[in-house]
Length: 216
Image (tube, rainbow, N blue to C red; front, top):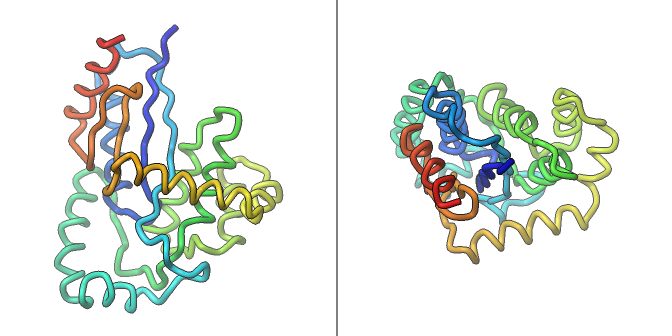
C-alpha cells in the first residue's frame, strides 16, 4: 500500500514549528483525513541559529542581537503565545534563560529516526523541554534524559550525539535544506510533490496531502 510521506523541515527552538506540529496533528486527526493512506512523518534539521556556540548564549543577549532588545521581542512573542494557545500550547517563552545551539538536539532526532523509525516522540519531547519546561536542550545530559523519556537507550543516544560524524551529518542536512531554497520553517513537503511553508491551518495542510495523494 502507498505510504504518504510527510517531510518536515524545522528547528526545535522555533515556536512556529511547535505550533505547526500541532496543526499537522490536527489535520491528520480530522475526519477528512480518514481517506488518506498510511502516513510516515520524517523530521529534518534546520538551524535558525547555526553560528551559536555549543554552550549557547544568554537569552537576553540573544534577544538583543536578534530583535534589538526585549521590548520588541515581547511584542513579537505575544503574537506567538496567542497562536500557541489557539492550538492548546502554553508557551513559556519568558522562562527561557539560555539560547542553545541545536546541532546536538538534531543529532538526537537523527538517532531516533534510524532505520526509518518514527522520531515524533523525541521531537515532541524536545519542543516541550524547551518551550514548556525551559530546559537547556544544548546539554548532553538533558538530551540523554529526553532520549530515555522517549523509550530510547540513553547511553547509545549520547554516544551517537557525541560522534562528530553524526553532528556533521546534521550540519550537511541543514545546508541541503538551504540549497533547496528553504529559508523559513516549518516547511512541509508531501510525497516529495507539494510543499507548504509556515504553520498553516490544518485545512491547508490536509488539502496539500490530498493533492499529493491524487497525483499518485
